[in-house]
Image 1 (cartoon, rainbow, N blue to C red):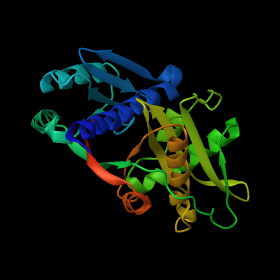
Image 2 (cartoon, rainbow, N blue to C red):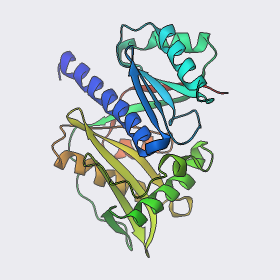
Image 3 (tube, rainbow, N blue to C red):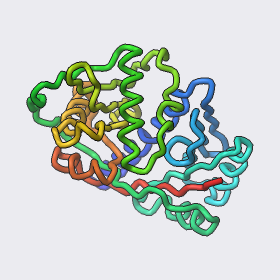
Length: 267
């Protein structure tokens, strides 16, 4: 792969992640907000938690780092909440943002690998007793939200974040998003989402209920949504791995492309 094609891959992977941030605000419907101005994306959700679900991305690399922070501080200050600045380490493009964040009192809250998978994964059997299917109903969405809310407490998120972000179960699933769940005796134990944008696909919201861990369910749902991405025409699929998920994704065939780093302002 040439340097230019790898640069394009990194750009598309990060752009897909930015699009998911927009979708976080859209999921919150009337309680969410999106504003793009002066080369900066600002997004807010139905939750006031400052990490992951309220934040800023620099869209124009020529925008001064302090200008990004000034815009975000003012915008979120009007809402009385904290926020996170989301950066990519690819070729040091956001190093000035990282430096400015630390200088101005934001705290590092996440440093995770932005990973990429470049080939469809081999099919594998579903774990015994598990039904794997695409989530289509309002009931499915409510169950998926509750599962994520429990699962992500292991990573330090307080309970209640996901229900406030995904508080509109009657909202039709957009065509560019597919969610998959793993069920046992009718209970949704694990799930994941794949989102198409910028000519590729990205995997998000991978989670497994704590009591169901160790059964290979996270690998199963990740494999499924990854292959949905490839079958939908994506030349590669990206994700941002948590510390719990990274070993699973590496075994499946993902590799690290860059670091995805968050710096957060708490109020």
